[in-house]
Length: 121
Image (cartoon, rainbow, N blue to C red; front, side, top):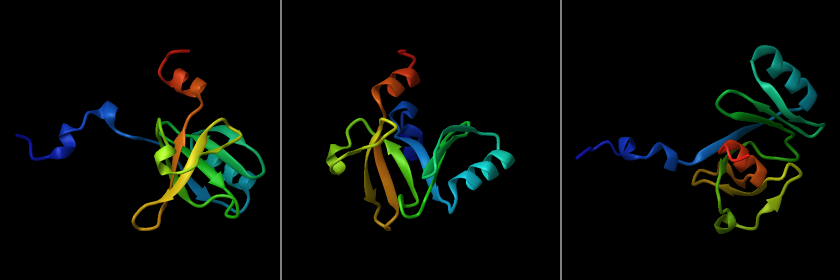
């Protein structure tokens, strides 16, 4: 029997981290800085937040008065975490805190995004 439990986990059954959010003072300046120094694509940008896509994860740039620093986990059912709030990008989410007070966003993706990611377009 394998004592290393991490090796027994089926890769497909693990949760997915969708993005990490960091607070910035100016979204436009932050986007300029990240895209100058790193190879990434701008998925979305307005005055209040932006989402940058890297090869393995997305980075949200958020204003402190609008969002806490956090990371987001995709879940099929977030109702067990609280009342979901719909967002303008089609996602819905609930913010929770871990045992150390870190913010975690439990989120669902729009149906079209899920279908595109699974190749069911």
